[in-house]
Amino acid sequence: DNAISIDDFKKTELVVGTITDCQAITESEKLLKLQVDFGDRGTRQVLSGLKKFYTPDELIGKQVIFIFNLQPRKMMGYDSQGMLLTATDLNGKPQLIIPTIGVASGTRLQ
Image (tube, rainbow, N blue to C red):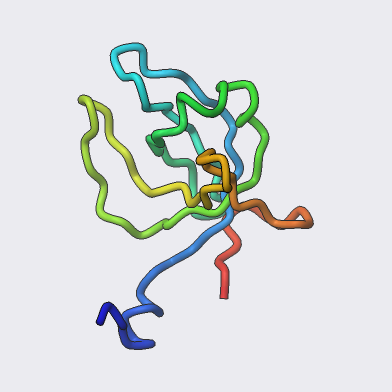
């Protein structure tokens, strides 16, 4: 059983961020390096394994959902300060979790 308590769930900060820049990490087959605007929460660098599915230009300007309060970690020598959430479609492509209306960057999901 993988059930967690409501108190554990409340610790997870799901936050809307706007991707302001995206670059392919040339030494990786999977990773893109995103600069993400979280409004009053600041800008962070987040690495995501979407390189095979999206070009940098397709992601710039998108508002998507991130796990905001993960411990930073190094990936291929780069810092990653969060995690972008996706859902895999029936064809195996990760689909971005996008708000249906524009909201302020940094808005926490409830």
